[in-house]
Amino acid sequence: MNEARAPLERGLEVRNQCTPGYAAPDCVKRSHAAQWHNAGLALRRVLSFVRFGKGVVSDVTDRVAKRESPFNVAGHACRPDCGACCIAPSISSPIPGMPNGKPAGVRCVQLGDDLRCAIFGQPERPACCSGLQPQAEMCGANRGEALAWLTQLEARTQPGIE
Image (cartoon, rainbow, N blue to C red; front, side, top):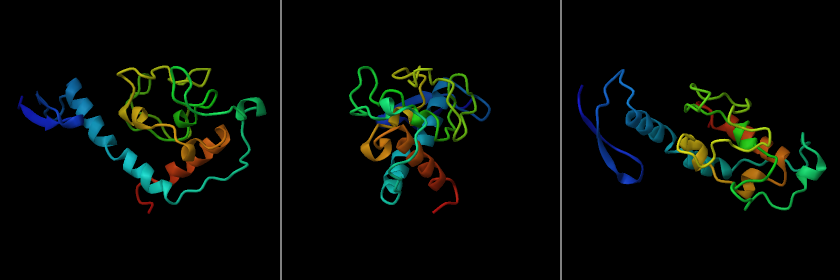
């Protein structure tokens, strides 16, 4: 096997045995990091022109939709009873239980009944998920707005869409 040196996140370098057909854990990590490196860039580009509709009909009760803030919830940085970012976008990185990722609009197998990520803060959580941080533009005022915005983001960032 050939030895290769490749940059990882945060400018670190490691020696690896990454050859075609050899899926060492470091090779896979490097591949996933490279794949999702520009995810934040895509989000910033879309933020400039995507507008999600106010008053979107939500599939959750008013009690849930009227929570005060989507942020600063103990243990998770997102709004309770939402899970929009675990449903609306496609994820091409492997997820525990979904080795081929997940298509857009499909619930992630790691999303619990409480609509919380079961692998939040764990090393096996994909980099694209860890890098997605709640923001007022993305989360909206309720789960329905978050689902609508993320669905539009997914549609507008598909290959070939400009």
